Length: 263
Image 1 (cartoon, helix red, strand yellow):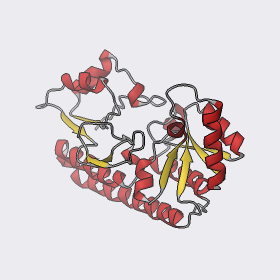
Image 2 (spheres, rainbow, N blue to C red):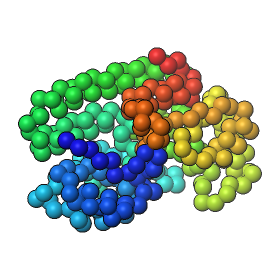
Image 3 (cartoon, rainbow, N blue to C red):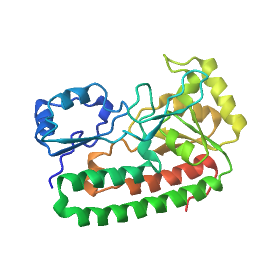
């Protein structure tokens, strides 16, 4: 089976704009996966309009998963079922949800290519075993954490926090990033980080986090880059960097954020 990645390496789905050629690729496919949960923004509707459901099996990966509602103001994050309307956190692949996703991919592949059912299921089982190992190691790391909360420039790790009993604190959220933060806003966040005792804050690979850098510098803590898994660079793609590779790299970063020791 030929695989075509619609969003190229180095780009993110919510900032992507498909070409007519891309849309035709979707229309011609026997199977089309997309994230859902608002990740692809408006362009996904145009792509789906060209799809003949008798020819192309469409899988919205978020459908049916327990998704986390984005917090606003003083609200606490809650959960909703995938496919529901509203502002949900779309980064559901950062947790054990990946095990369910692996099963869904396999079911869809078997549906359109039943001749290779045994091969798909064998690869699924091996993949899930590798994910279970990651889950075990991260759970051990979280259990040994000195801090039960972690600070990150922006909040793509809601699912990790929920899965492992941690609290994610978004620096952008604390600053209310409607515009440039004031010196007083930055100082309040610096004071909060100093009072927490943490030794590091997280930033997201591929994003420019000047404010987070400023806050970290003023608080005297390290900035630790983390992967949100939304994309990889062209170089990483060509080297065959996997989800598991990025997760392991993140574990080293989270160990610093949480005051634990990476396995």
